[in-house]
Amino acid sequence: MKTTLIRGGTVVVGNSVSAQDLLIKGERISALGDLSDFLPDETIDAGGLLILPGGVDSHVHFNDVFMNTISVHDYYTGTLSAAFGGTTSVIDFSNQSPGSTLMSTIATKHAEAEGKALVDWGVHPCITRPTERTLAEIPAVVAAGAPTIKCYMTYREEGLLIEEPDLRRILEGLHVAGGMLLVHAEDNELAEAGIARYLESGRTGPIYHSESKPQSVENKAIERAIQLVREVGGRLFIVHLSSAEGLNMVGAARGEGLDVLAETCTHYIVLTEDMLHHEDGLKWICSPPLRDQETQDQLWKGLQDGRLLQVTSDDAAYTWEATQLGKDRFDLCPNGMPGVEPRFTLLYSEGVAKDRISLSRFVELVATNPARNFGLFPKKGTLLPGSDADIVLFDPTTRWTMGQATSHSSNDWHAYEGVEVTGKVQKVISRGEMIIDGENCLAEMGRGRYLHRRLPGSENKG
Ligand SMILES: [Zn+2]
Image (cartoon, rainbow, N blue to C red; front, side, top):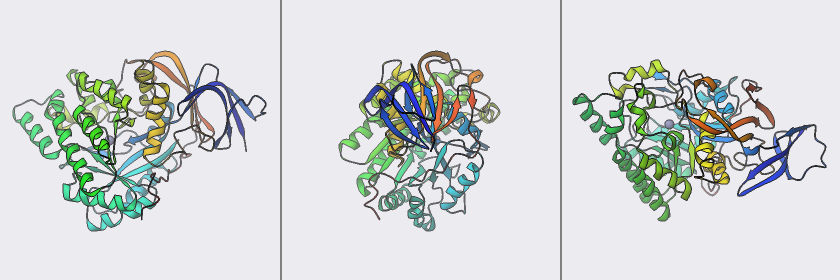
């Protein structure tokens, strides 16, 4: 097996940040420490660089058919963008199409990834048709390595809404099977009523997307979802949490001993709803909507004190042309923005470089915790010997400007255009193979593998 020694860098493993050598043997990390006596096949000089685990982004939407359009990133362009951004594992959402099985959501993604994926990928099936037959399939998808099923508590007109009695049955089914329920928490009734009120009064511009779905819409859904866990047990994960009160509810639920986890996304901790006032404000329509500065500050608190466990991108790239579907009505604009590439560096820059979080906490939020929460740890998300050699060599000091000119995304606009950042991904290694070296992608299309996941603590369940 080929051996590669990374020398002279600062390695971050758990709470330890120290100058160490790191040895890769084949696809895995083989040793850490002073390895100056070792004679490897290849040596990489990492002087002045941080040696970090490859990012794990457990929230992306590739090839997502949504709101009369389809997301721009496919398994080639999406994973290319991920790789350049320092992310070596992605988990993608796959909606059950009407009339088809839940197992087919995994098969669909295998077909999409084949011959295209550059990094490893996994699937969260989304239930859209909660029939008896679908519910009976839950143990099979858990066993197939996709134990995390998402349900939408809104988007009725998109055919995605799951009503409460069904949500309860799905949570129960996942609990028994050793899976976890993910919810998009926005209360459909409140959301629909809010949107209708704004449209009727002629308030149709992008900012009204935010105003029509205030934090109370999200809070109501989070409250209902937590109540379900209180009643039936099971593990609940709230994706893209963006509200201050919701954050408090998650903290309280965990204090009660309930198995309730939550993440936030890059855009909620970097951008505010002010973006929606811009002439091209449609670009920043996402759900839940961007919030105000005060809420953003609370989300950073949640990242610091552990109520929020991870930061994902919710990458959902739509072209400028597609956003124009909403030019006369905010509610017709496809919700979402590209983010799989900027996530890693933005979190470093806004978090570590601005002294909001430690380097170790950054690694937890960007890699370790998503791997842990979604059944990939310790294969992914850490640099411990035995783990996959998914490694980012990161320059912590370079300052540069994000935007279209330096992006590797296939989308035609950038959500963080002109944002000044500190820190830059220099090299990316995936399972022992150098896939990104500066501006060069060395990865062969289709090399990415399916991530068969198993949740921690699920061993005792049926
Ligand atoms: Zn999403």
